[in-house]
Length: 303
Image 1: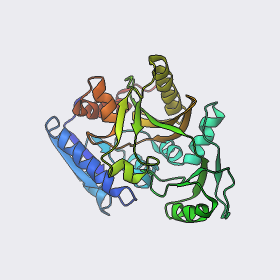
Image 2: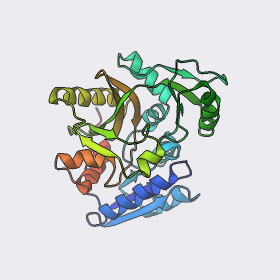
Image 3: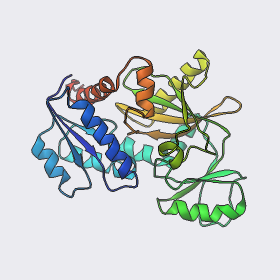
Image 4: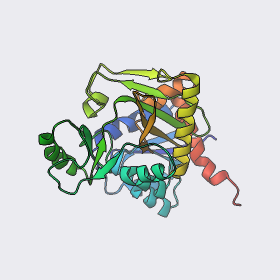
């Protein structure tokens, strides 16, 4: 479904602002040749909603990452204003952003998750080392530390607390595997191989030594299993449109659910576009498909 007017909403005030600005610029640049009127608006502007409404968009492409745009707050504002936007709604965004809530839901549904605990100001880890200490409501690995010795535990928790409530998770040895979800497309999983100790912020955005493996080195049967798991988790959390489900594929070949990203990175070098490109879906076509999925929210008859 083609549209004539689109707002790209990016930036914001959260810790992932700089990444979101890159996403927004890339989306705007790619959409301009095929949509007559495209504007990129920074939600850090206190008048951002007035600017969006004045533009009268048919759809808003949300390019906000982390607490600035994935926690349901922006979605609630847009719902109240009667504006159509890409991706998941308020409730799904809130749950997916909360790693503790989402993991508990997915575990209750029978999927495997790393053992986790909530930090309650202890000096020592409640779980056997090594553990991963992270904020429960942040993204892009902000505030994440790998703790191998007890002396590292309290400082890691103090660091993570800058970004929100702190959770402790058993360290699973294996490979990071992401499963993109875009409507009904069957997009292959993608594995991340990094020279860093784990896939932290520096590895994601500053390292030149990462290798991304389409299909994740899995058998076709295991790929199907991963894609099916990703779809089921996406649906259980109530997500819509598009997103990315992140796992660890352990050394003993078991998939552990890590988190659901409702607005993953969206430059041509990001994981979802890489997977889409491998099945012939260009970056531009991918963006248009995500917009089309959003437009279906109003085109479906009320039952």
